[in-house]
Amino acid sequence: MSARTDTRSTRPDAGGIEIRLPWWAVALPAVAFGALLLLIVGPGQAHAATDDPAMGQLLERIVGLLRR
Image (cartoon, rainbow, N blue to C red; front, side, top):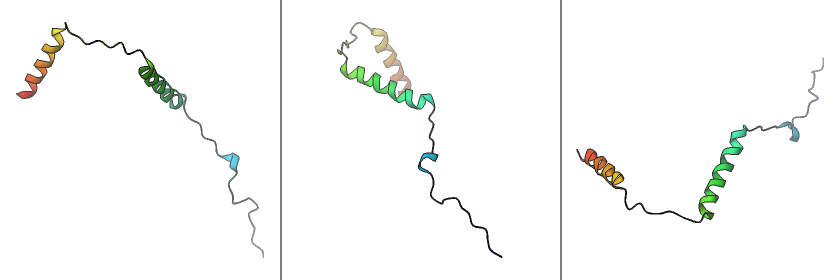
């Protein structure tokens, strides 16, 4: 009585592996890269806030609450 042998190859097919990514796995890094690139290349029109006492008061209150 002879044993049955498997005729399939033990080596996996190179074309048998399929990797599918969701759309956001490609889109989010591309958008982040574009945003960072625009920040680097941008003209840099940042201005210091000189007449905004509300921000200073807010920071003083936060520091006061943290010191308690």
